[in-house]
Length: 329
Ligand code: UDP
Ligand code: MG
Image 1 (cartoon, rainbow, N blue to C red):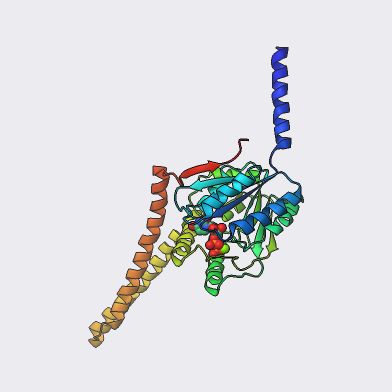
Image 2 (image 1 turned 90 degrees about the horizontal axis):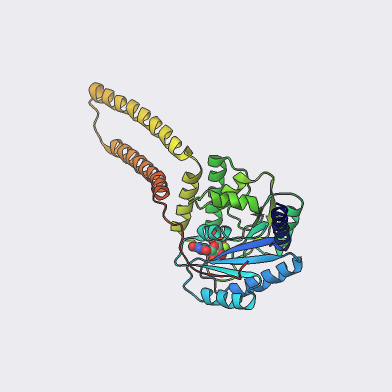
């Protein structure tokens, strides 16, 4: 009996020791064809993190790059396997899926996300960590002065506005990826098995004591944005349908309003025809087109929800990992 107690005691000691030697900070970075940035990013990031004196790890998630990125990451791992971990997908699944894959494997008490293109400065990570030490459980960066082209900035403003209105989630800039989270928030995000791309907004829901701080935003160091119009539209739809049924409800209400208006319109036309013998079809066509467009939009929205349900039921893997480079824990 005594021996058993002792062994239990030892186990607890072991756990404590491990926690003491555990990782303080995990930095998760999704990368897709970033060969021009990997070197600069890693040297600046590692320098910054080494200076914090914290125990850290950097998880690169290669989202199916077809340039020299995979090789560069492998070389980087060979050089600094004490802090570098590399997860390689077998294809391109998107920035947020890559981050999720990283989240599933982080070991740190605090998890930081960062883009690979140096638009956010790795040197600012210690500012976020300082805020975490003050007791916040989520520190979100917002891009005080955004340095993207007009189109990208504008779309992002609209998306932030829609997110705020439709989800009621209070945060300044869900698109800014320089953010820090307490591990329990990341665990919750991973548990949801979410397929939606809006991890930042999702995580915000789980935070008890979040804060937004301004961060620098620079122009992309090299290469072009990995987002095109199609990807931007996709994530906006994801955002809309991922968090609420509001779009569906708005659609129903608009549909009802339009039906009522068209009912009145119909009677007016009927009245004109019966009393005045009125002719001409221009308005009629415009009206039919309008109705059709609303209908198509509605079908699209329904499709979004159905698609989600479909993938949830089928349990499709969200991503497939081809290779993981890491030292054993
Ligand atoms: N990214 C990714 N998969 C993609 C698109 C982007 O992993 O399909 C990564 C990319 O390498 C970068 C980050 O996500 O580290 C943000 O991408 P980008 O800078 O192109 O987006 P933007 O700054 O234009 O929003
Ligand atoms: Mg960028």
